[in-house]
Image (cartoon, rainbow, N blue to C red):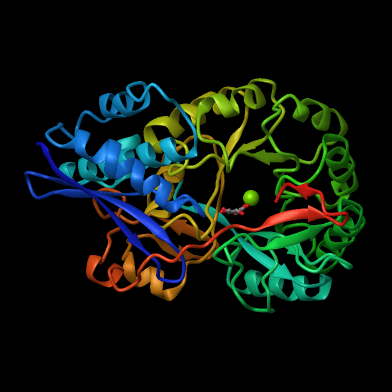
Length: 403
Ligand SMILES: O=C(O)C(=O)C[C@H](O)[C@H](O)CO
Ligand SMILES: [Mg+2]
């Protein structure tokens, strides 16, 4: 089998999504997700100029060699743009091989380690009462695990909180970055009260999660971890920016709250120290941004040695193609923890028909060969690209802060 075509499809059914389609001389094609939120066209250019031409004529079954060719062969290694491009190629090649073998991807990877994949949903509210209502709605829908993000009194807009009650939260909300204001002290005073209220209302069995979105310093993160200990979070996510991996050793010494990190990571080298020092409990690097299945399974294997489990990133800025491939990976990977789930809009679901299904707080990947996600190119063509940027954060005195 030979690759005869590789094309990038950009569509914006409510948000920008980038898909790589690789076609073979045997009529089998595969698709991969290459979406990098707010930087979509950088990956498109990388794929179109540097990757697609070099794919033509290759045997798609040489997945490992093709991965090495684009990683080592680029000389300039790593980084979200490069690794998203490689991730899309890799996902599409695994899709092709699954289709050629007539097997769902999880079987190619080594078969089922579990019957179904537990996901967590997103509850968001402007105040604690609003959050509790949203958590209740998720529980009614069957979710066993819910991430809870709440508006902070005295701060106009907060990460993870939709503009209006009941609306979807989409952070890439304007053409150029909008500016948010952040106060660490107001946030730290509020969050323990939120989780106290959640536990009082929903009891001990519901898994609850929280995303700090990189905003604290290590000692502030240590304080938060300690103060929410009585509420037994499933995890506290991205409590500090993780460029400085050793910061987590200090947080770890102060708290038994489980820690999750890695949605912005794109290689095993970003994760290595955190995993080897046993400073975290869940690794979130996912297939699109961390070089595809071929690379993320190395990360998962390293993590397994240190009791670290997977907790893949799964916001709407990753397309259903990533979601489908991730659900196969989750079904197979021995050290699975949980999978994030933010439902895509009806428009996006129509552009990307898929075999995966939600039931009772869990997903199954389906039995379609490959990753089981397709793209309706005609429909995709009706939604042209629109520039959208993620916000920036400033402290109350105007200092630029981590968003
Ligand atoms: O889903 C999460 O946990 C996130 O933090 C979502 C990110 O803000 C989003 O992917 C940015 O593009
Ligand atoms: Mg996050």
